[in-house]
Image (tube, rainbow, N blue to C red; front, side, top):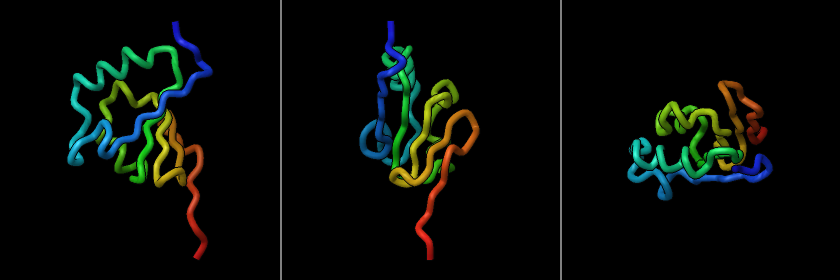
Length: 86
């Protein structure tokens, strides 16, 4: 039984993603089973548009944090996207 107040965050590049290749199906299955009932996040220095192709569809319900915290996306909606003013 999970705890919906617990957040589990996976960093992509160099942690669960190697050499820029999409997350393999075995790792994806393990993440699904380990995080059931918890809040799942994927984080990266990449923008969200570059993160999505790396994550299989079954994990796309997670919250994505991109641009080192400058963007947040969930369920097809951008929660926020910040940039430095020029």
